[in-house]
Length: 451
Image (cartoon, rainbow, N blue to C red):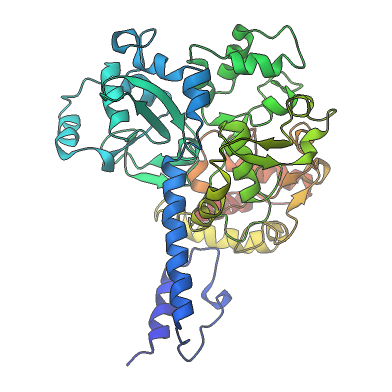
């Protein structure tokens, strides 16, 4: 009879991604670890935290409907004048065109069948309202009046930017894939669709009194799909020195267990960034403290607006940060599908990654970032300082590489400057004088696609 741990070890070995060999997994104890009452309580609490965190990630607005509905009046533009709002409204077809997604598991069986048969009017904003009422629009929460007939506000959740769907029923309609970067979501265009952008005018006006609504909408529309500028309302820098948008690519929220600093420029830990975004980007009602934002030279808007010490009542954020963190850490990076890369070439690429190319010096397996302080100066990695200098520490983070295949849309690096992985490899080949042949560069790309 096989030892139970042998079965578990076999299952682990079979599920190991290409980047981790079986020999790299420490053997399990030869004797079963006794499970105590306290152990069971800890397991139950961990599951409770994950379940609560999943709810927060998918459905909690942190009270930001006061901003998205109350200040921007986005719900009015979604509803349209025919449904008590303003303008033409937002049809499902237009919403999908903006990168919004529909959770098929929230749809009644009859509606799924009607969608398959093409019997649902995708050009009517009333259909969008019906989808919101079903709580099926990923990352968007609709708030209706007592009769359920009039949309009175909307709020957003973490899932808006960090979830996707598998298109199981139709493009943009499928099962949720939490943690995936929403690389076709046009956040800027969605905000610009709002009847009012006055909160942005007011904040940006702190450093430039000439800012008006038309300018704000032009900036927002410059972001494009899959990008967001988290620093815009901190430093007011809408464009890079070369004239391109200062927005950066939305990163994935999976595969973060064991990873120290988060974001492209390592602002802080995962839970630091959750607090930052929930309060300062999503505009929720909570508490956030980061005195680095008091640096008026680097963050003039944040310093003037008091973003370094935010204390809203009621606090609808802080008690949710722990379960949200636990849930995010529970999200593994998805394995690359078989057939999506050349396995033989990936095997050779792995040897190069750990050997001649020395990629593993910074992208240390199996985290594929450095354990510890995973930060580098712009000079070290051979790129400009612009985005690094918009962060407190002036560095770039070593991005984890697991699940790289899921977010190739929009390019690579923080701003998508490299359209293909081959461009990234070529950059480092030049930067570090690696002397890679064309075949070796191709093998490295196949390995990166396999992670």
